[in-house]
Amino acid sequence: MKTSKKKHILIVNQSAPYSSSNAKESLDIALAAGAFEQSVAILFIGDGCYQLLSNQSPKQTHSKNISQMLKVLPVYGIDKLYVDEQSLSNRNIEQLDENLTLTKVSQHEIQALYKEATTVFRF
Amino acid sequence: MILHTLNKTQSDTELNQQLLIACSSNDSVLLIEDGLYQVLAPQLFSDKKHWSSKTGNVYALLEDAKARGIDFNKLDPKLEHIKFICYEEFVALAAEHNNTVSWY
Image (cartoon, rainbow over all chains, first blue to last red; front, side, top):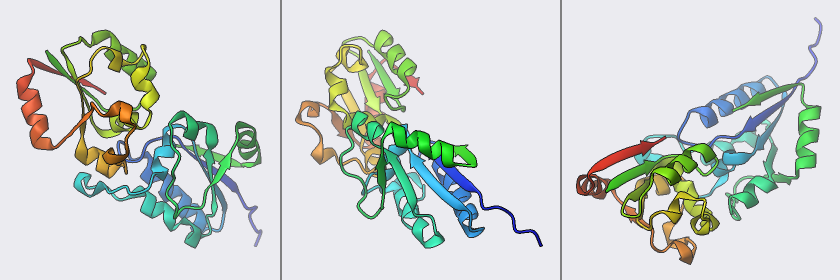
């Protein structure tokens, strides 16, 4: 049997967590790709940074807590989480959820992420 | 006297600009859903090109702040005038105004 080449998947999150299903759907793709042992990197940029705030409690709005779900990604072998530092400073976000292991990246590094990827999904 | 409800972040520049044009000084703006994220950026509220330069009557829906991890006790002092309200107060606010306009 031919072994298929491992894909390098980049998932770009540019949407805030609860007003659309984008954040949830990007997680579904990440977890599915992780289950098939593909290499997955996730980049949070623009309003996607708002997914990383601590103390989210969407109970009243009947949504699942996105930051809680992000926390389990390393269990599925997804530990490459990046956040655009420019997007954070534009939005005055200083404190991120400390349970998440995130790497802050510059615009130059973001370019490299796109270059490395064999497949890119934007949400 | 209009109640404007805004449910988008500052990233939706065209929408925010249209609200700037439409808003009068005796109108009120209520931030709901993703509109809440604007309170994390206090510099917006001293920007003449931001809708907040038109009115100081700014409200924000408390439940939506909680859902998004926005702590209204830790806001910039410049934003003290923003009143956080519950759903019942939202209803009262809508009744107080002649009209409601949704910005989405």
